[in-house]
Image 1 (cartoon, rainbow, N blue to C red):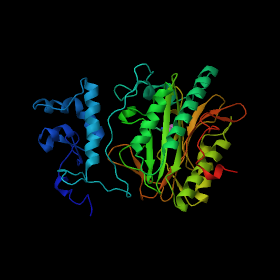
Image 2: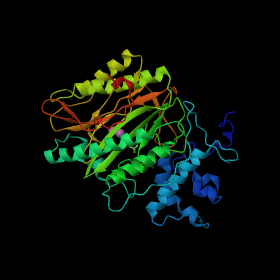
Image 3: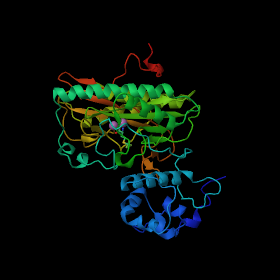
Image 4: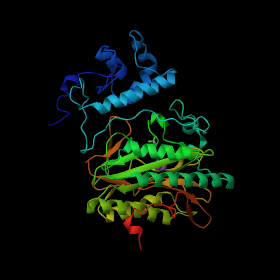
Length: 403
Ligand code: MF3
Ligand code: CO
Ligand code: CO
């Protein structure tokens, strides 16, 4: 039975901010049984943007069960409930079901509450209110920073922690584990090392890492879905420690995976290796995409265009922008002392991506599988240092690395 077939009743609702067709309803308004018309929004963004004026409609009713105290906490709580609401669609008895044309068979599941970070841990500037302040207006969005030896040493330390955190997540992966449990491993390992999990509340992202299953390209939100035998799952970890970020990801097999998915994951791993192999001073950033595109298309796979590698350091995302696809227009050449990520996303089918209504999850347009690997890199005088490289202790999960 199609869980989305009884959605038409609400197709007439329009967003109370911008007037576009609305598929989301303010959870607090639903709880308070307030009129649907004033409670409808097209996207989480419109909901967020209207919050300061919209929340006043709640005050007319008694609000029970809202324990958040500060305005920031109230926004976070409402948004979290909004996701929960959005995710609960399809359950029997849910009165209002937003329509969405899912690309594949994966569906969102409920998201757990906000995980806490000890007050003693240094946080990036979005930790409290979800809004990065330094990052968007920094000069480093336009010029590529040359790191000092002191910054580089901190990047090494942080990237090494991020690697150990990812390895802990990898050890937890098996059929039956939820992606929320993976997130818990990432969160606990990060704070145990004295770090802050950079994704947590970055532009309101609700969890401490990204978990991207099967047709999810990237930015999947950890939730209550249990990994199934035959799934593939990418875990993307970023750690903030000593004022800098270290960012990496890997795609793992869950139990026994079909041959085609094994090929996809191995090819994606090789794409990243081949791209790293050309990194040295004087090489054009646009060459990275040529190398990746050549290897992926040779294997019959396609390259995602909408998400790129990025500069990293005291900022999570900054210049340079590094496309992974061929014939790209990336500007500039690599110089010793630069730090950036390369993180190719390779699809079994079409390159085009779409977003889920949660505003984060990027999926393949055709619902076929996607894999990704990411490293944080330092350009050295002679070539490259992989700051997030595998350790002797890293779990042995990729058969092609065995002699
Ligand atoms: N780690 C991702 C990257 O490689 C970014 C995740 S941002 C989040 O750039 F908010 F989705 F977590
Ligand atoms: Co990255
Ligand atoms: Co990442």
